[in-house]
Length: 272
Ligand SMILES: NC(=O)c1ccc[n+]([C@@H]2O[C@H](COP(=O)([O-])OP(=O)(O)OC[C@H]3O[C@@H](n4cnc5c(N)ncnc54)[C@H](O)[C@@H]3O)[C@@H](O)[C@H]2O)c1
Image (cartoon, rainbow, N blue to C red; front, side, top):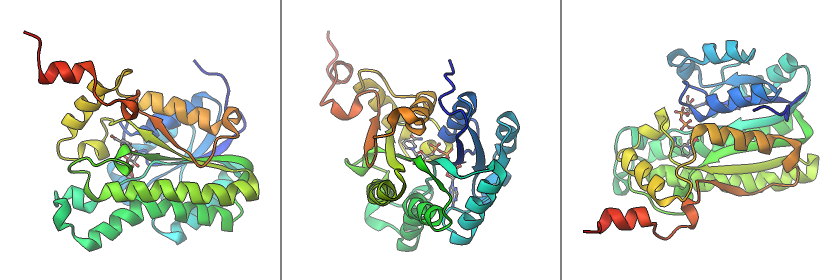
């Protein structure tokens, strides 16, 4: 069901690679709610992905940008304001990549150059985006920024390795920039800590199926799917949440508040 919650709002949506991407679902929901936006992704990912299909379905233009490049980001904001015919009301940061995870490096033996890459792509890119948005004066008063995070920022999960530090940094950047942009322009900056979700990035993590099933069994509501994450993003981009900022918002079916669930108890000690 659509409510026109984003009618007249303009935005930038990063990270839609294929129909499983969380950003893909967000784009579809934002479009349904009347928002207009520019889609962006790293130039390489755009060649591999299906972003053109999404752009056609949502009547959106695509501006390629490597989110670690200030030059690319400057072009992205300048072009987006031009294409959309006004300043930006909402931004989705949906970007994550760890070369250490891709190459299955154990935590105690990380490659430090790759570690820096993980941090740059998955966390500092949020700082760079907001820095450029501010410098180019591209943000509208009362706008909203959402970045996607994971509970490994607070708790340890095997094989999430350096992405745990990236998510902790991402959440911290959201708080710090939330203060700056809130004071300057009443712009909100929040992170959503999303359940494990079957996407390219998610399934790249060793043991992901176990993370997924365990979280699902622990959560009273079950894992939150990407579609529900998209609904939550819409609510955060809308004016209904105009006083929510600098928060890490759990979107996890209750996972983060559970010690142990009956499902896990039964799986460990089945009743005879
Ligand atoms: N899938 C999960 O279980 C899960 C859970 C919690 C949070 N998240 C987060 O959600 C976000 C989106 O991931 P997803 O699961 O939809 O997977 P995805 O693989 O569909 O999306 C990741 C995106 O990051 C983009 N990207 C990588 N390097 C980039 C760069 N240099 N510049 C610009 N874009 C770049 C990729 O091209 C891709 O589109 C990530 O931040 C991820 O960590 C995912």
